Amino acid sequence: MVEVFKTNIQERKQAALLFEVLIKQFPLFKINFDLEDCDKILRVEGDSISYERIITIIHTSGYQCQVLE
Image (cartoon, rainbow, N blue to C red; front, side):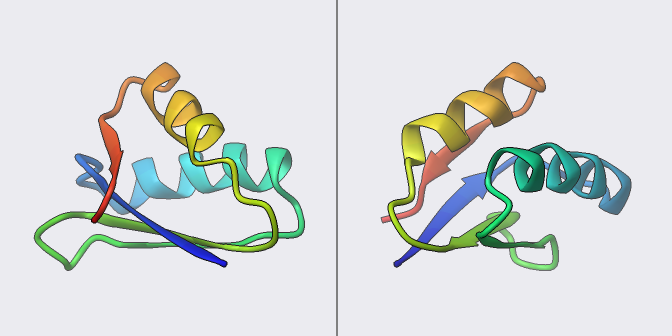
């Protein structure tokens, strides 16, 4: 399963910090950011993805995040 999120993360440094937070919570998932995309994409691949938890983690870190339809 793959979930794609639109974020407002602008810098690679921000993405790297959030990657570390996310990978600790979801160690078996494949997680990456595409900051070149206009929607500043966060892509998460794995079994049983809880998009609500991912959004909560991103929001708690001070960024916006929503599932990209």
